[in-house]
Image 1 (cartoon, rainbow, N blue to C red):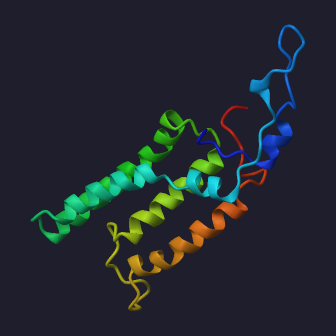
Image 2 (cartoon, rainbow, N blue to C red):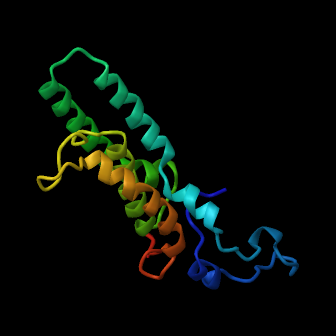
Length: 161
């Protein structure tokens, strides 16, 4: 299974069939089928990136460093992994759609802050709500909704033009 999401536009752009040299249909060139909701859901959550971050995050949290040092280290790790996310998705996972890469990066940000992240304990706008609390409310909504709306012509742009 490819990591790229197959959208309605991809299906429409694929040739219905190709023929081999002898004129018979090529079974490998069968028309693409649009990814279903669950396929999109799996492809939009960068689980391997989130698990790497979670492993490093919990290691930092368990150290005996001071709170300021831990927070600085968490920001550095978060930033590095956020920068590496599109590189990993493009080079290693073969994702060529920038819309999908951006959605996956945003998903990583939400997952990271739902664990606490570097700003997890900070209050938002002088209220009692922390960043972690608010993001933990937003994460399931994003996870539920984004596979439903992903696939418009603007979100399926590839890097190969």
